[in-house]
Image (cartoon, rainbow, N blue to C red):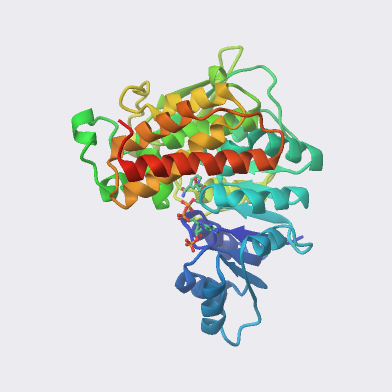
Length: 392
Ligand code: NDP
Ligand code: MG
């Protein structure tokens, strides 16, 4: 039977790749609903090409403009977070691609979980910030949670699987690979002067701006470390981050008998997306087959926590528990935004993250309100640092 998709974050990089998989397999997938924030031009193109039943924008002006541009199309146009939650939980939907950028993705993703949809999770920030509540809801509603982040998708593929998902039997460690980003070998002195366009220029992956900056600062790997802890019920002590600049091995699982199983491929998000959408089967993706002779060499090294403190901050936040992960994520979202606007330097991102993480009291996450409160106070403190410039 055809799977009906709700695509949250349709105008983004993951949105592009998801639409491409839907385009390639019209007999397997249909697009019921799409959501984005303010990119009306791209959304109009998506509506015209894919003809979803519902399209949701972040605000009413964007919705009105989209409706004007798509006049004559049989599409319902809505706006706002509640509408995003509605399409994510609509009866017509089988699978929800959670690909909104940042903390803004949390509520619609939770709505999809509570409506028992298959969750295709790209939006790592929602899991990082609300981790325990998020996983409790996944268990309570018995939903299939497919990691789309390439590393976590790789780990899922390398773990023993049954009809319900993965098991961890005989697993000794997870090996989370990291490209090292564009500044892998740069000195701290040179990293001080990095510009947003240099930081967005990832050597192997083409991604949205925020995740590209996170990849350059290794915050992305920090968020992924926390993401892996929640997804696979591990702690940072069970996970080694391995710098592997070619991004051919997307991650590995180490077993107690000494075996290490790796998932490899050309770095293209269409592969994990298609796997998530078709699991437990596989479908074609039009992605080039990996030619190991062309790659020739695979390198591995340890991450440098002095030049890239964000990775250590993420492990610290995990052990601090409670709202600490929401604090770190919020500080980082504010700091990355300030860096993109050239208000702070590249290395200041980690400095602000550290100050916010270490200065705010941590509370247990007993309900969603605690996560939102943690996010709010951390954003406020990070903004104060950005505006005052007093964080060194
Ligand atoms: P992009 O910046 O390319 O796209 C972000 C999408 O989210 C856009 O559709 C944007 O809409 C939408 N959006 C942003 N803010 C809001 C909001 N407040 N409400 C509703 N929609 C919003 O990001 P990516 O596609 O690169 O990443 C999306 C998520 O997937 C992130 O969480 C990222 O960490 C994760 N991810 C991405 C990978 C990648 O390769 N790109 C790999 C692994 C994970 P608009 O265009 O209108 O602003
Ligand atoms: Mg990743």
